[in-house]
Image 1 (cartoon, one colour):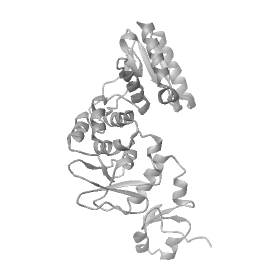
Image 2 (cartoon, helix red, strand yellow; image 1 turned 30 degrees about the vertical axis):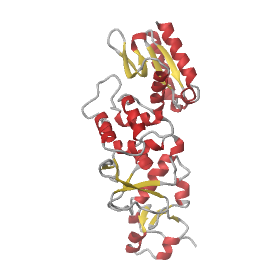
Image 3 (cartoon, one colour; image 1 turned 120 degrees about the horizontal axis):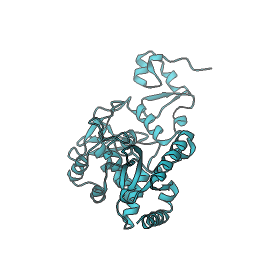
Image 4 (cartoon, one colour; image 1 turned 90 degrees about the vertical axis):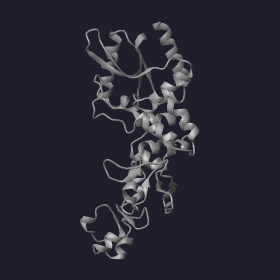
Length: 322
């Protein structure tokens, strides 16, 4: 027998209490078309949460967060990796556990304990709490999220990349940032987070702070910059606008040595599989080359598996340009 229809007002995610108040019998809440990711919460769907977990891990976290928000206590807030995903911050794949949410409370409240939840007790002196701009959920601020996630990251470059994403000031290529173009947190807010007091991973945060920049567009760009600097090369300029001799905008390049007319462009997978993006890239690179720029195209493999080859190519380009 097929399960009876649920009241449309419940939506795809709801608490058992709300369902009972709407007249849904308890037996209906045990039917096979409803998943129970958390105690007292139901998710509608033929394969429930299991289908959700087959998607990208970031979407898994957002889906589970939406479900948990139905029963979230008023003192609780999303934190650590969960908050980083909800803030759309770049994380290594291995750090994200698609079946787990990190939920915190401020002391002296007790950390939550539930299936699928990693509970934390935070201090008000070192943790700021805000609201998600789209969903309204309570979660740790971007700066506090950076500080809590940093100890979970195995490579120091990723600590910098996370902060770079938070401090990035978005803008339209060829134009200066508008007053409305704001970062998730300022460099001063990141610094204040480090100064707030002792915490796990404080040394890593202190080491990363001087390396944070406001112009990095992606995790691979941060890695590229740090690889070159650690190899003894000058630090490249990030998010650099290139104009011709008449002041006409040509392109905004990821990293650059403007005096030598060297551009370093990171080519993500979308550059390769999107024909519109590919055609745009060809035109951009052709325009830069016509105006005397050398373009070094960098791939994921070059950054994460063959950094010495990346350094060699940049050294060779600098030597040739000089």
